Image 1 (cartoon, one colour):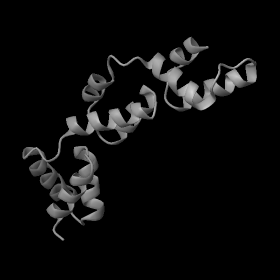
Image 2 (image 1 turned 120 degrees about the vertical axis):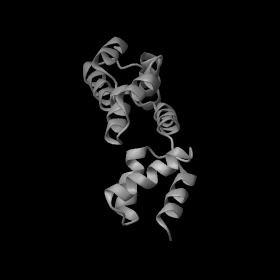
Image 3 (image 1 turned 180 degrees about the vertical axis):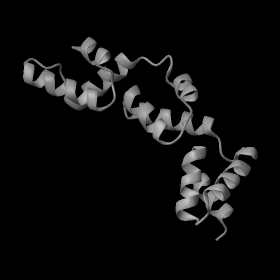
Length: 138
């Protein structure tokens, strides 16, 4: 199977960021880094690959899982997405409400003792919510 056909198959299943697609082409389609970047650029030029669509899809998916901004930002940075694009898509989200939703889904009623409170706070921090948001909830 040709590398372009493989890439189109991957893109048909889900969105990929430019850097993520390039890495996968190098790894799975046996292309050099330059060849992979050229192919990814051709796909981007034809609007078959889009970092914008990838970020929208990724953020929507992570918000549905009630993950916090720190975790989302770190994952997108790891996938090679520009910081400006990440910032644009993480603005205007009510992280306090999302953290409370996550806490309530996982633990139910508010904690009454300090150990349980600390456990819930650690969980929210592990899900990528900033310390300020976690402290505000409790």
